[in-house]
Image (cartoon, rainbow, N blue to C red; front, top):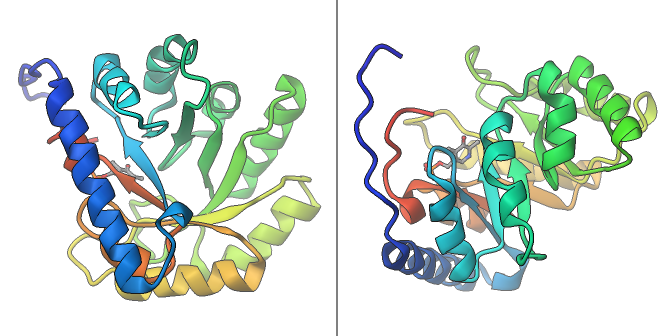
Length: 236
Ligand SMILES: *Cc1c(COP(=O)(O)O)cnc(C)c1O
């Protein structure tokens, strides 16, 4: 990064609480349109780049589930927030480096980034060593984007089998990030079919711009950041 950082304004607890209410109302409306129970859709509040005080404000407003895409940042923010908030759940989302697997297993309740055999092996080893088993979701690169993490569509079934049979991992869901600027619905549909065929109950799809479409296609978890916490200071 060569740009000089823009100063981040302190988090506004009222705005965060209002943002959460607004998103929850939109989730409920999307569930109603889809004939689904709103209780079947978990809101993952993506707090990456936002300070611990922003997370605390969301916790005080009743939000329990959070998403972070950098293990170091998550490890710096979350452990201190856990006492007094037993319902807090942290999801690691987006690409995960193999050398961060152990830290991720220590800090996360769910890791949504399982996407290659090396990472599967590292996570299996970390889980055994730490005696702690976060929930695991397979990330699929449904748009075959070279810069994006995720297993290729045509390798996803064999990879999932290897995770289960060779690495002994319990995988409970699937996750995708459709390409920006494209209609996300074919991607949501593909992932929903994959999850159903593979007996994966958790479907993590939908962000600030497309979570209602994701709910229409069966998402059980939506990952919403900027629509709750405001714009991020820098791309992340
Ligand atoms: C940042 C991020 C989100 C949230 O994005 P918004 O557009 O701010 O809602 C969701 N999923 C992943 C993997 C992310 O990295």
